[in-house]
Length: 265
Image 1 (cartoon, rainbow, N blue to C red):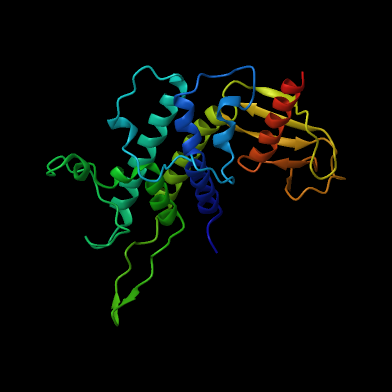
Image 2 (image 1 turned 120 degrees about the horizontal axis):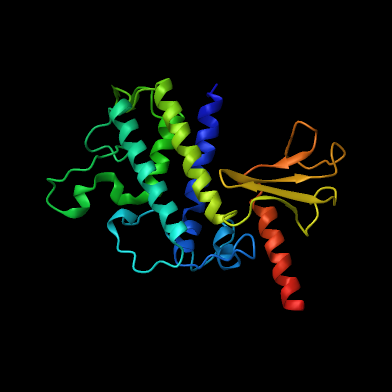
């Protein structure tokens, strides 16, 4: 059975990967404090929709190596740089701790090598971008590839060792901090406290309340209480609660409703 900390950390890493495109888009989008989430970035938040113009974020030059002339949203740029640096450094730490993969193994994390012949090789696996780094960390957190493998009829040593507890705690700390920075920009950059959403609960039609803070991702709670049958967790008072990122579809529906009202007006 996997450690609960590992499961939560993997979920946070997936949230970071899935919202990375929205965070990059926010760098070029002026903040809109009067709406939440920002209307200009709602199209990027709908990760389930097919879009010919969707951002390809799996293979990008690291932000730390790019020029950023007059970004429209400095907070978003700071968040991008923070998240990217934290994730890359964590991948370095975990690889140095548990990696045994061979040089030709595509799963291997390669470190920065200033003496490499070209710039892309010099930055190692960071050249593949944050998406790949987050996937690498998720695999180590979930102790994937830690058993001997059969290759060409020969039993080979495991590419990685199980993650020690101190490294899992460090991965959990970094993932939580990065998820909070992403959430502040993508969904709750200008909102603190709580307010009632204009859209009702999808299960019982009750009022939905969104709560957000500067240091925590947003959550949505149904005021109906124990009578609500929504397929989500309950809080200490028995009310249905959508945590981040499960609350994101509700927030998007709220934004679409507000857009419709504005067009009708």
